[in-house]
Structure formats: structure tokens, C-alpha cells
Image (tube, rainbow over all chains, first blue to last red; front, side, top):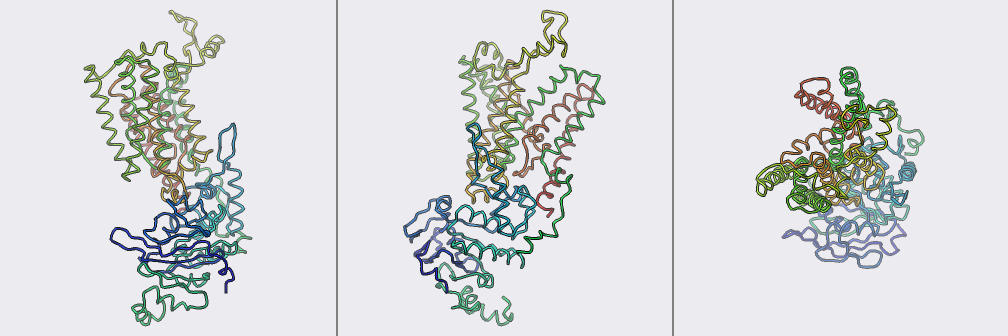
Length: 264
Length: 371
């Protein structure tokens, strides 16, 4: 279905293992992510999704295994390395600061400066203009760039965070459960944003435990269970029910689901 | 999404201008300052409070509060407290006396080494807070006692007294000391005296000289620190990092803000402000006392809160903090001029602190969409 998958993957995680003391959080996970695809990473709580994306974004260093980014082996010492390479992570709750304005949030950590008398000052004019433009592109109407992020809805905050990452040159965008706390309409806004981002040839890694959200935008699906991957499936090759079963590790949920009438 | 983009969200009401004004952090400070001035203009106008000497009197007291409030303000916005400010003032003053008078080092060297020492202690405060993750309240409370203890112990041990004098003599002719103890603008004040804008002494050996002979460096330092703090906070990328570190340290870290560095630097800046305060004070008094700076940490924090900063960090204003300090200074001296029992000042402090915190909580809800 997706011709882009014929290109080289932008990032390859090969046999990643991560041990925390005696706990094996990841026991050899391999995932390839291609530019312009939305790669869904599914798994139940404790499956190792968080550990895996934290390894990808440089928060953790893998105990074993290799990360190949744009064809070359990469070693990230900390998240800044990963961000500099073009791997951006948008966290569910930890993306925005409610008390700060949208424009201050948008440029947080990447503040534009303008020299006056040889001193680099924060270029508010530029920051405000770019913020308004980017927000308009994403379909968010701001009262002004100085509007506090606290006044935005959860979905709008995610969208601001995503467009911020894209603006600063993300090639791989990791979204950590962006929809899990959102309402129906806000979820659809975020999913629409993901679609927009994908069309700009950016690789999106979408972490969720909601199969329906994954099916709505995903091109490929990788299921993690107890630190291992159960393989990657293309869109169209797998049904939502099969994904759900894989996530739960098979039978238990199947019987439970029967009694609940398929509402899980 | 396209249609919402075209029409805007119909559920978002226009915010009235007065509410927009209300969410500026300085507003409380401005209103408070206006009220306080109005009150004393009505009740104490004839007392000399608004004569040149009276103005200089409360300006100096306010400037003292301002110097420590600027440091406390930036630190609070960065999400931390420093309860060791008062002890640091006593400690820094005592170190000047020990180095400059007891050990007899040149004053400039005593000043520079005191600065280095106090900044290092500020950095230690910061490192302990970020490495242990303990609340800064506890860490700096420990330093409140540690520094105060040393401030009493050191002069007791080497001089068998708790006040060391002779600093003014030791600073005589020094090139660095006047930056803290001197005055500027003597010519301007002389001129103002000559043309009759301010009174001059009519008798004694200073006859003909104006009653105010210059602007103390203490006031100059207050102005410099306020301008520096305000520009740093609102006009630089570092200022954005200060807001971010206090607003949500984890989110800031995820965005690549060096939160730990920001916090440590703010602890050092607070220590710097306390040291400036201490230097101005010992140069003026000519002595260092073990009890100097008592309770200053709370006064600084109260001034900052009156100025609209949130105790939880991430929001506030240096201008607001400076206005908070002005309110402080004017009321403290104003009660004296108005002939009111000075213990009532504490009552006033408590009341205004409570009022400011309640107002700030309300403003916080308003910024974050009243949820």
C-alpha cells in the first residue's frame, strides 16, 4: 500500500535489549521506521512501549542492540543528541507549560534571538509571528500569541507540541499516547494533525493502546508484549480484533471480550 | 477543522480589557503601591514623610528590600525558594569584616573573596536541591542555621565579640568599596540645593550644603538589579528558561531547557543579591553584626508574592517584586512618620501577604482557563 516503505528506513532499531538491574524491560525488539509513514506501536501497560521509545529518543541507552539512524549507527547519550539528530518526542502530559504563553512555549528551548548592542535578546516579534502562522496552519485559532497554553484544550496542546516539533525539523516524531486523555473530537483533531505531519515525509511513531485510534491513521503496526515484539503488520493485513488479541497476549482477553460483547 | 479555523471557536468569549489587565502579574503591586501612597499622603503628609529627607528615608529602606526581592523573585519564578538569604546577609557582612579588618587584607580583595564565597554557597544550595530532589525549602532552611551559626561562631572565636567595627576605616581609599558604600550625584544635589529645590543646612559646619548630599549606591544597585532582572526575565532566552524551569521542570527538560543549570544559577544570583545587600549595609554602618539580616528571607519572599509571583513558580514579575518592596518600605517608614505603633507593621505584613496570595491564586485560575 505505501510506496514509501520501499525507501530506506530512517531509523532502524535492531534487537534492542534493555535491562534495569534484574528486570528485562526489552528482550530484543526490532522495528524499522520509514519516512512518511505512521508507525503505530501498540501494547498494554508494562509491555515496554515507554522503555522502547525512551531508548529511541536517547533517554535510555540500550543494554544490547543497535540503533541505525539514516543509514549510520547512532549512539545517543542524552535526549539533546536525539533532538539534534531530528528525533523529537511529544509526551502526553509533559509537553507544554500551562502558565506560559503559546509563543513562549512554542520556542521553549529554541528561543530565537536578535542582537542589539551585541547582546542576544529574545526575538519576541519573530516568535509571535511564526507561532501565529504555524497555529493557523494546524487549524487552531489563537486570541493572540500571548494567550496562555493553560487556556487551550488537551487536543490543541498536543497539536501545538506536534507543530513545534515539526517546525524545528523533526524527521522522526514520537508521539507518546497523544490521544489517551482526550475526548472524541479532540482525538480526531490530533489524528488529523498526525496525517498532516506524515504527508510532509516525516516518520511518525504513534504509541497507543487504543486499537481504533491506531487503525484510523496507522500505516504499519508493531505490537509489544512483555518486552518482546510480536512482529510488524501492514495496514490491511490485520484486523482490529487481531491487534487487540496480540496486545493482550492472546486468549484471556478473547474470552473476556466475548462476555463484554466486543466493547473493549 | 477547516470550518472552525474559518469561524473561530464560538464558545470562546472575548476577554474584557479589565480582565486582561488583571492577569498581568504587576497589577497587584501597582494597585497596592497607589493605595499605600494615597493613604500616607492623606494621613502623614505633614509629618515630613514627603519632604526630601523623608523621601530619601523610605527610598533607602525600599531599595534594601528591592535588592533581595529581585534575587528571590527570579529564584521563585524558577521554582525554588531560598530561606538562607537573611543568614547570607549576616555571613557576607561578617566575612568582609574578618577579611578586611581582622586579617587586614585590602578591602577590594575582601570584597571579591566574599563574593566568591557567597556565590559558591549559593551554588552548593542549588546543587543539593537538584541532586537530591529535596524541596529547596528544607535545604535552604538548613543553610539558614548553618550560616547564622558560623556568623556568630567566627567573630566570637577570634575576637570574642559579635560585632566587628572599623570597616569604614579599612575601606578608606579603596577603589572597590565606594561601589557599595559611596554616593553619586553630589553635584546634582548641590545644584538642587543651590536653586532651592531641596533644603540646605542653614547652620553648623555643613551650612549651605543640601540636606541630601547624594544618591546612595544602595539605591543605584537596586535600580541596576531591577532593570537587569526585568530584562533578563522578559527579553532574553534565559528568561524563557527561568519561566519554563519553574512552570514545569519535566516539560522544560523534554524541550531541551538546561533546567539544572538555570536553577543553580538562580541560587547563585540570589546569593549575589544578598551579598550586595550585606556590602552596602556594612559600608554604611561601618561594622558587621552577627544578627544582621534576620528575617530578611521572609521579607523578600513576601515582597515577591505581593508583586504577583506564584509560590509554586513559573509566573511572576521583577517589576512587581520591586513594587512589593516599595510597598514594604513605604509602609514600614510611613507608620513611623504617622506616629503609629511600629509593631502594627507586622500585622500589616500578615494581612497583605494573605490578600496577595488569595489574589494570585485567583489570577492563576484565570490564566489557566479557570479549571
